Image 1 (cartoon, one colour):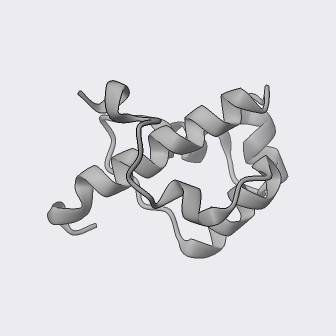
Image 2 (cartoon, helix red, strand yellow):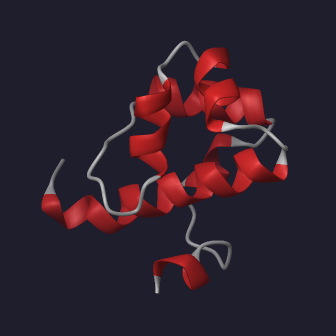
Length: 84
């Protein structure tokens, strides 16, 4: 990951966490539905871990959470209070 994109990946992870919780799903359930392990989801969602996610995986997550993929990429108010 390029250092210049760290905040963007962090925002994506926080949004995944937000929408997953909104759906009432655990990290383990999400991981199972996208054929990833729990550690992967935990690392993607953790704001202090540098973990990238491919577009294929992002599209899989969006499908499972029933969220348009672009919602993970736009800068909006959902995570501003979490990023601080």
